[in-house]
Length: 404
Image 1 (tube, rainbow, N blue to C red):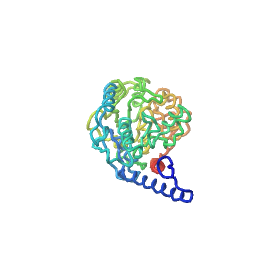
Image 2: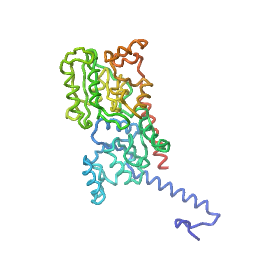
Image 3: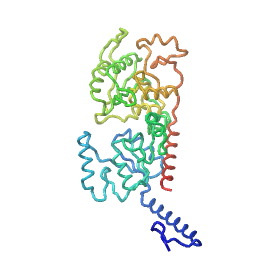
Image 4: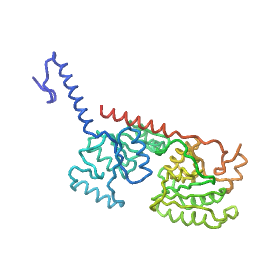
């Protein structure tokens, strides 16, 4: 008897049905063995950013398996340091039976699902994919800095989709991607109660740069300060990102914080007394969680680069106003147009700002005091639970598809 592909003897025609059954049984046994070699749990690859961990944890919980948080091995921040680390990974010896980029992880005990929410955690995610031969279902929130086909499931926002679409239709129509309008926030849809009678305004300043079409300039900080001077008496909390764009922190301290704390005159010539403000700087230890800061606010102002905060504010059903929205360009301008059309965000342009008196007479109804270019219509409620259910169902279906 001859052999077919060197695997099984070629049987006579009358017994080929038996051969097919044998092959099917062997295949099923192999698939069962592959599944059983993975731990029935979900790993979260954490880079110690609590806001990202909040998002990945929410997705992990939705998958319905026990969750383990795994810290990633810190990588050098400088390009030269990363180059040396890459050389060590190529030529250095790995710890026997241990993962190189994930702390306290064995190559013999790998999970069924593994989730990363930042490019800092990407080396660990790719390492798990390599060690399991792609059997672990890898999930990445956002656009990774690697080949998109390497990831089992990509969870993208509408802005991520727009970025891919700008590269060509083939990049936008991915079988391994699911998208939501806003990035997943990790927060509940239900509005948290506001426990204060005095208006509390959270001014959330991001890194200062968004590649899709915005960079926060000193002139934007000046306009933000001018706008805050026009607010009715409020308690203002200025929230600074842990890693602002180069030179931004000093600009904010000198042209925003100092100006609000001193008696000043606005561009209309009106004099304003010092304002009651609190600064929360996430570059410093011991700061309150951002989720609590946003939940205790009556209004949230976010700079145009700070999309994660926009998502969290919409999830908490808080009014969110975008500072610098009028200066966005390209894809980011289109994205904010979509969000504004759905009444999820508004441009920060408070009543009393320069030239706002020219706009107010054209508005029918009550003017929104923090966005004087439009009337105060009801805000839309963003259903974050529906997004989460859609994402979890897609990930489970992809796992079944890739392991069937």
